[in-house]
Image (cartoon, rainbow, N blue to C red):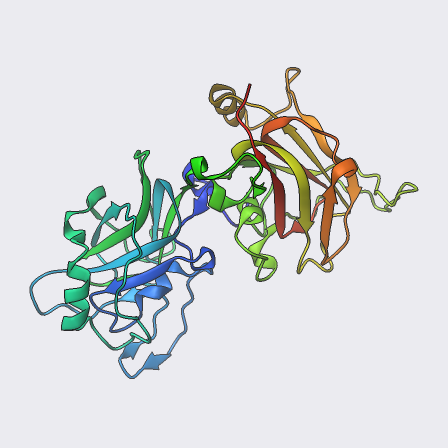
Length: 385
């Protein structure tokens, strides 16, 4: 079992976190940030607890924590998604907030066409929204936004109860979120899992696009192992910040006691690890990048990439089968088995690529194991025949 997902996690946590700081998500407004600022909700790293650490405002907490409310109302904040898209679920983590967690929340959403101009947040700890802040945010009428999650109870931040998951069925595109806490308290992390959605009608037939980017709607559909890092990191924005921002597997236990390689430097090993993605748009791939940035002593020895066309129905069947190989598999080689090198960007184009067909899905296989930080598939969006 991967350390990046837990055994009973819902399927939607395999998708992209559209509200993560690493993809540009921002807190635009919060009613109160007395003990800990709302920006902590969006941190990619797991929450920490520091014994005995206090600020001048109270106990240091790694999350968003408001003061004990002594006036009418409840606390709430506005979050701008880093990648607008279709939301499939929420993960609310109250870790370490035991006697001070928010007892209830609700989530509202909006798809705003224009850029929101609100007063800059700055360092908010030990403060609350000013009258000026409230006047500025009132123009959004966020209290009237659509509910994706009605008021519901949370559980305290003990190890066995801190994770709350909420499935969403909306198929619309959203850009902003209003997270309501009732009436006050603390939340460590708030994750919004979904799939990026862009307007492809604005893209010309000769516009080169990274069809595997999460910003363009790509999503991970399955993998063999994610012990140290989830493969969805491969399609993240920008270059990886560190090893934790990539896909990294455990060391395979079936690797031979003494390793041997062929004349091209490819290790002759029995096992491998894999992950499957749906492209953001069907297309013809012309350029490819595999980046092992930060993986200096644990990059894979080799990699291959296969591709195919799958209908939504066939994709659903393959997910249900956990991508087990079947006689009717139609995977075709896009990049043949190729040696990789540590901490390096590898570029391939033209004759290096074996497939000149429109595809919808890709399968990346690494051997024997290890880590890759980013994968880019540049190509031209195309309609299927």
